[in-house]
Length: 442
Picture (cartoon, rainbow, N blue to C red):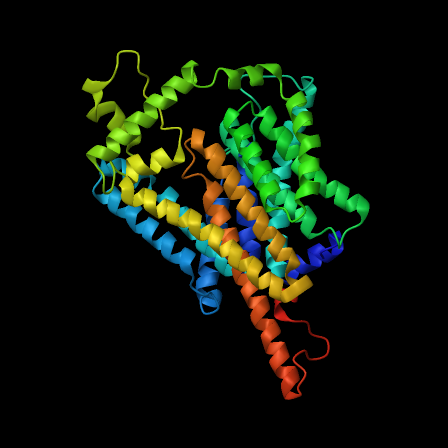
């Protein structure tokens, strides 16, 4: 399966329980959105049905094996803050109108972490996630190539829904870049040279997609990920040399118009307006420091509560910053809860790699994937500093994947301990014809 042989992948997928298959189906309908592309399919809530079906099955079958961890506590606190902020919001009807969106991300986090609990399931999930993103990135690459790798103000976009705006698509590409890169490195020993080269085409199209999105935030995210990769690399000289080659190439392919936008950053109309929004966000938090103005209350509060303080030329828009969004709508309590989720992700991935080092080669794949998830979070935080995407799938799917990788690694570590104990006792821990649970996914 790790050699990415189609027949082996299909056989592995068929062997998975229905809960894991429904998670895969949910990600397909959420990221590709065929029901939005082909109107004939838009007669049924495909994504919601797959998600709720996976939730029901995990509650029935996977609840006992799902271990609690620190990230669960941070998620619980953030959920309590969002609900409390909705109840006490300036406009609670607006909060409750959109509350189902946030609660769906809580379910996504739980379902992914509970249903995807073995190495086989994790690898299959990452393959699916990368395929759905590659569908968008290769389209962006071809669209950009069709205009001679030039510049378009509106940029390229992704699938309908969450990624149909060029800014949000750019954020997704900053997350696809490190995950696809470390996925390729994870499977390097298992695939052929041509297979490895094909895998490296995924991060290449992710970078080109970020450039083609014409989003400055996406390019900042890519730059942050590149710096993070260099800092994390064990072979810093080799990584530095690669960066010395890659950075000039990237600079050369970035259109001149896009470079000009960076040179005018801070003084152009877009930058000035965003600085104004950030100042307003701090004002909102000063007036409502504990729970903010209310979940999803930014726009109505901006329009009504401070109408008399608005400058004549000031446009009312979203905060364009995930941290300001959390601070203004959820107060300092919500911002601290968000920071706890971010810190918990890095800590959990670090624990995954610590267990992976003890497992040796058998823990190498999951360890590399945890690095990819760290890099994806770095990309999201850097690019998310300039867009309003806190309640988009970016961070919540990343959280679920982080928990799934860690729990799968912990299960593999416990399985190795059981095998060792049985061998010491003089028994065979692996009956003939059977493999350890963490490799087969059963």
